[in-house]
Length: 493
Picture 1: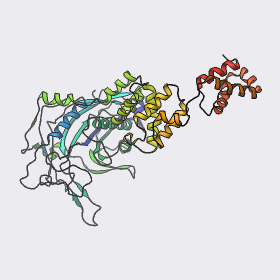
Picture 2: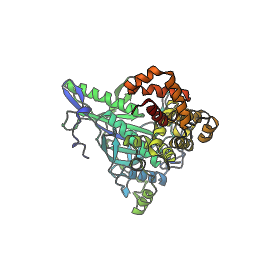
Picture 3: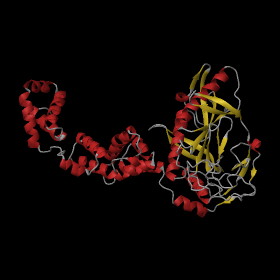
Picture 4: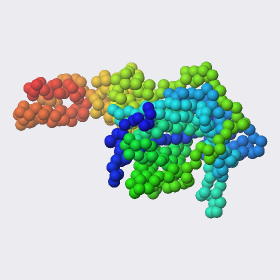
């Protein structure tokens, strides 16, 4: 979809003093590639080592050291390209991007410029159960990360940690297809989900394994693109949304005052809720790109790509469509379940051979609700899929009611055990013996003649009788049987 063609959505426009403004957003996501070694050296990529503990002579740019490509990183980039429905370029070239920075020991970054490994693609992003947008991918290229300058270790000096130097990154560049902070947040969430399914990046934003450069410009609806500013290294989805809102309002304010926007690189300060200028934006020629003379072009054949494609896991969109078709789920429930691969696997283990909707209901509302409350991941759930499946079976068989099931869930969560054995041992079965229920109902009717008169005039009062009978049975009366008996005895149709 061409970014210029998408009509302005009135709901997403920002009101200014001189009328409505439209935000135009493009994102460059830097995703750290999941691999044991760096892009061009055998050093470890493990997080959290002592400063400069994972640094080879190549990473430190010692004279005469030559880079050697890590094949697994290339495979991860191609897998990701396939997951983004993108063109895989069978020939790609590594370039040197020249700039001086203390944590860039070579004085250049090995990246890809004119010939990236992955070309154009697109991903579908759900904004709500009824609204979906398609976001174009411009390219995905491989590059090495820089080191890290540390300014808080000494009163007068900055230190440099090169553990990250040379770690493989995929830079995934979107087209300027996004039109609001919410769209940008949904896009990053979806992209992160795809990367995690494929296993090419763990998406851990706290560790800096996924970070975004956010390009923001504003324009009057239908006008040409405005001048964009790039907000560097935003490291949480929430901050991406905030940075976009703040930067758009800053630009609108300047334009409405008759000023112009300077193309520049800015930083977002979440504490102050503002963006501030970092440097004027360099153009590509400022970096003096040229092909890296130490690295041959990457060349693949169709068989290499086909082999990687054959072993891709089922991706979120395909899984969501299958969940809707196979288990009769709503699109909303299906998208909640496929947001993380572990969640989807857990649900399938519960749903197998059972009522899919009932399984989804328990997984999403009870289990995810409780996990969220306790800040736990599905992998750390005290209730296994087999236990939850057993609970769903007991409801389906009419052994326990929904209310008893909630008590049973609590026991499974805190104490564990086999659901069927717990119900048996603790006498939690619901009473389906109509004789016992009839006896309880007769006693309530005999004790409350005034209520019996009222219910005939006002059938909605039946709920009162249901409550009393439930109380009498300790919450174990089968609700359907109870309702039928009450209606018959009270003469209500």
